[in-house]
Amino acid sequence: LMHIFFNMLCLYWMGLVFMEFNTPKQLVALYVLSGLMGAAFYLMAYNLLPGFAGASSGLVGASASVLGVLVAACMRAPNYRINLLFIGSVALKWVAIVMVVLGVISFDGSNLGGHIAHAGGAVMGVIYALLLRRGLDITKGINRIIDRLTDLFERRPRPMGEPVQGGRYHYGK
Image (tube, rainbow, N blue to C red):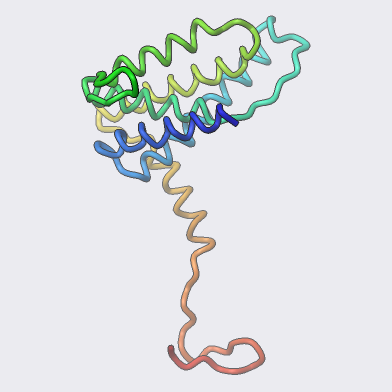
């Protein structure tokens, strides 16, 4: 419970920073792409690395997605200042560096799959930021898919004069 609470707090704060330079649609798409990249890293590790042979583990959480957003925001504005409780004003790059280093040094085997997923999310954040610098927004494709899915559930007004339930007709308001 605490893990998801801190993930959502971090997503809220880093999402605000991210959206100072990008759109909310890019945030949602990067969140999804980072989660998918984290899942891909996790699945590759469990299928290719001998240390996972015979291991049984589930893939849950949003940490890879949150880390992708954090790393992308950091690469866009590394010297952006944020205020941390008990610490004070800190450049965003130091927050990202500490988070990534903590992820690397905590490869103790207890949640190795989770840490590998975190690395996948961070890699997606780097890829997104580097490609965006070159003018390529990789979130456009996922946003088209999301737009099409939301269009399926959008309520459309009926043209006037068309029958409604029970054979009655709808004539306006």
